[in-house]
Image (cartoon, rainbow, N blue to C red; front, top):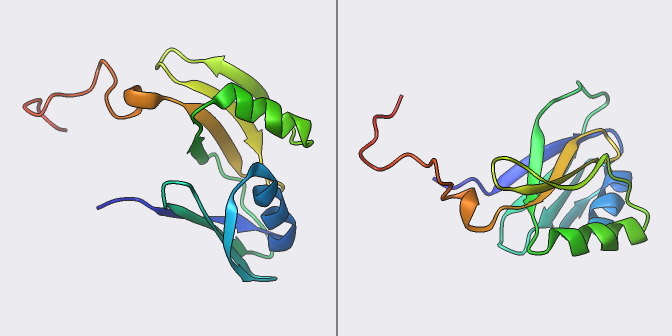
Length: 129
């Protein structure tokens, strides 16, 4: 199995769709005012679905960037506000955090090879819990 689609809740899909287009995502479906879908460069998709009210969530949606610092500067230049500028993390990723207009937590990051192959990755013969 592969995960390739995430749906985020929104109280205003049109507003949120504009935000994600500003981030640089390609909108591939528009069924306003209830739904919009976007495509990532690797072919994965994510969507926005209308809800009358939202329950605050601590779920974080991660979007990997080849050049996080350049992406951060570009987005700051078009008025995107960040909660945290890019920072190196002890798990060997570089991360920047922001919220979409509905409060969904987003992390723009760069991990490269360590995303799938961190130094502490379990070996194939390691016991699985």
